[in-house]
Image (tube, rainbow, N blue to C red; front, top):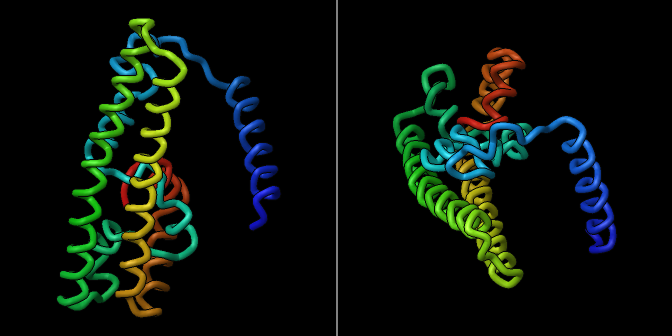
Length: 183
């Protein structure tokens, strides 16, 4: 995609999300959180290596996630070698995701501390925010890469069965998974 078009789309989406957020969100009560920018649930999700919706682009475009594939192994008719390969993908993804999550939480704690102590400056801010963004990008890539790897292991009929089984979970549960939990 052309850089100018991408910048225009990104600018529009950012403006839209900021104005929508300003109309519907409130910070009341958040000033008492250990890390003001993260809820307790978000902290736990990062520390536990959970998806946090980072793989939604893959999942919703028919690239199954390793955790769900393992949960549905019997219904999908996975062979033992497939199960072992998917388990290996999940284990590697989960280990890396948990490590990245710990780093993100740690960096967010530092950012919060610098603001709360009122000793942050522009250079430190830019550096720390860039580090957090890079870690979040790596975390997202980790989850998305796992979906790619699992998809290469499954037969087309297994992917179709996965889609049917996940859809039968019902839209509420399926959507909830991709708002923040499993991958």
